[in-house]
Length: 179
View 1 (cartoon, rainbow, N blue to C red):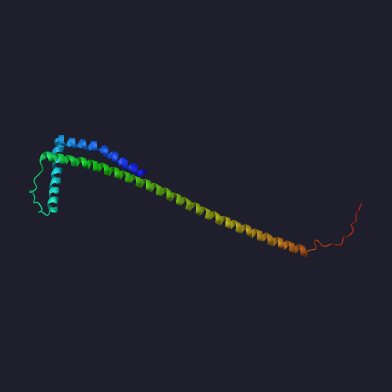
View 2: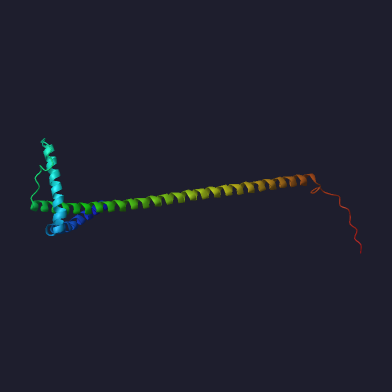
């Protein structure tokens, strides 16, 4: 679902960029600075390049310097203004795509960081559990050692009882009671 929304957003911004491009076209036609310094040179350079490419692709001789006739000034202003408008729309679109890419890369990086933190947390928990198991194993060995020691003592006591006179009938001597 995010992709169609991004595409819709791109189209909306492209449409919003058209008035800016149209403003720049109008400004280029009316402003002497844009007219002479931006539109005419851009259009003449494009015209010269386009003519060279067409002649070479048609198999004609590459034009020499000065052999390409410059465009009419009104056509050059229109072409330059159109190129400025299209360039503006292209720059807006490229900026939007770059910002979307940057946003997605941040989102991906954040997700990877969260996954790394989760894995580190799980690893720490496993390490803590292993330490706890080792402690409990040591305590269990200690308790087992005490139990074996007590069994040895109890066994020794039992043997001592069997070997002693306790439990055998002894001769009882009459007791003399003095008043």
